[in-house]
Amino acid sequence: MRPGYTPNSNTTRVVILTADAEFDRSARAAFGASNAIELIMVSGRLAELGDTLEVAGAAVVVVDLDAGRPEEMAALARLTTRAGQWPPVVAVTQGFDENVARTLMQMRVADFLVKPIEPIDLVRACARIGKGSGSGKGAMDAQIHTFLPAVGGAGVTTLAVQTAMILLNSGGSRTKPSTCLVDLDFQHGAVADYLDLEPRLNLAEIEPQPDRFDRQLLEVMLSYHSSGLAVVAAPNRPAEMRSFDPDVVTRLLDLVSTNFQYVVFDMPRTWFSWTDSVLLGSNSLYIVSEATVPGLRHAKHLVAAIKERLADGPQPKVIVNRFQQRMFSSGLRRADVQKALGDAFASAIPNDYALVREAIDRGVPLDEVKSGNKITAELKKLVLESTAAKAREGKPASLTQKLKLATAR
Image (cartoon, rainbow, N blue to C red; front, top):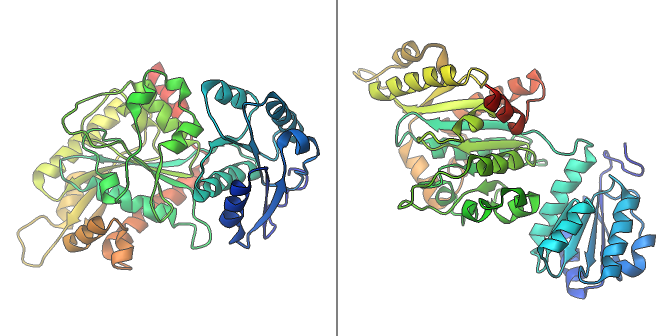
């Protein structure tokens, strides 16, 4: 345990040093409403007060400095050296350039933000950093759930969105596990549209220099739903067919997997050079099909192909979406589906087109439209049981480690 840190305390201490009256007001408004936060505001400049700033017992220390003044940067270096690995220090600057970023990274600040800063962004940064550092674990390894379509129009995005919402709320009303939904269909992705969000991922900007893609840049490219769900999605470009450098995509995914507890991937049907890496890095892999004979055939063939191609990867399971079995109907029955898919069959998700359509049009989870609906109930049973089972199996390898396995084979 770090000196002065009491993880079982009812409050979390956040220390903020600033000489900016507007930033002081904004920080007080952002943190002051929560009884769980013990906010300590220190008024003054880092160069004058940094050496005597009391950081014992803090979960996060935020320092507002002028990065253009050498004495301020020197004071920050002394503070980070004194703090060591605990508590984490967040730097807030008025300006930003590559030299400043490089210097801050060398000082090992936990994060850096550039003014003007929205209060919610400051809170999220402190919550994420404080949680990761307070647990003593540093970077985390996420549990990754991947959804891959067997046929077009099978409803993969709907299931991925709802799964992410289920995982986000799996900790109860008080604690929401950090959860990220990643839309990997860079050409026809629909996650942002389903959640009524602005997609902010720009891989073309990162591709020339993948090494500059760090946690700070990831935060810039994240969109947040009102539920608290983080979303990585690129603008929809249906007229462009591009396959990005697999190193760039893998860097993105590994960064996401080490900064969130749960990650859900919405995969395109097309197989790219980076698809193997994503599947190998997944804890649970779901192939989504429709309840038709061609759909089940495609799903079965895809299961066999993945097992042959990625022997070290997760065992693919098939979800039959929009399943509807009526009495005296000549359509496929559940027993027919189970017989066709064998051990690969995971679940049959009930059909409720009107419910799904309303949720998509409103940009909200299904439970907000109709609490306790059958679709969410079936997904919860599947996903939460899988999550618990994976947790019992032990800590998974990171995406980068699994990528090395794929490269070595």
